[in-house]
Length: 452
Image 1 (cartoon, rainbow, N blue to C red):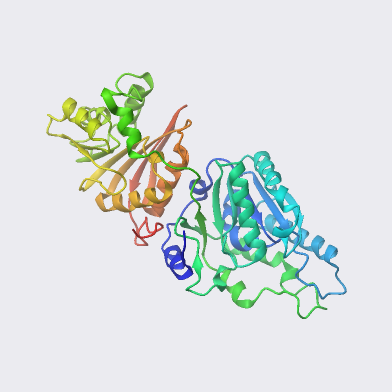
Image 2: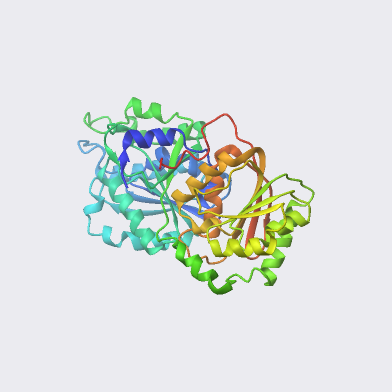
């Protein structure tokens, strides 16, 4: 899906501020770098935060950057490759990732995608990701204007075909050279802003001396990083864009078929797991008092009724997309004036607020990334300032493109700094996080998604 580069920049400028834990997940990070400096300029914020959190980090050096000074007689291409390898390793250490592991593909600088060895590169990188324990792969955006950047983005896509559960983040190096009207593949991406440690990035940049004109002096036509580019590296944020996971979410008929003939596919009425989970949810909210809550994906309404029964909230509105299940909830509990159940499809058909409590239990992974962005955008309109959101996420196999944890992370990340964690509980099969909605004076939290 394409938009113009100007449109992408406008969306990115208002992107939510994110934490690496929400974008990368619980595992390691592998960064694909077309040349031995692109990780510094495009992904320094990711690497600094990964180092601070003690994550396993891998750097895939697609080329050794040996073609930057082809006219030099004093420094041969093999010698320059050795210099740039050392510069890259020093820069990564300067970013605080001293234990990073390197995979050097040694493809030709300027022609990496045309080399016969490129065909086997995806398998090598996939095995490297396994060794790192990576949950996320980072690579240049497919339209970042350089043939090696294009090839590296294609390599990332090929790795994802082999490891479809990897999250994929794109970073940006030379895109700022593009004209505003240039078509840009971004409409299905969600941009986020990561805070840059500018001192660490400056130290890392200084390590790339060969690209700063400080090593090779006998090639006046050799590459030197331009001043305007170096000035751009002092920006307080980097943009990292989340690519959609492969696959399709279940269609509406999936739920209608599950609930047909009084079906109870998750045994919500009787299973030990469901009963214990509802009790745990109420326990996490114990001692808090709300006026009006919203239960998104209410099913037969058992949790909504229990929250009212325990006097955690005075009233609850339950929402589900299937009219049949809503009818069953209304039959069981709808006679009580403090309980209301309505039919509506996410993300657009939310009941009118304001709400000071929202419960979202094992629902988010039935949406794709753009639908989650729309949900956050619409939900923000219905929340009171200071409202609480309880997100319950299944940790097993969901059979959907987004896992429970990935959908949970993305939902929270899309709010930017508007959400603060109040409590977090992790059980064997699910995780619950209670969050406080306190929007600050900055861009709207869901502006990452394209306009409808």
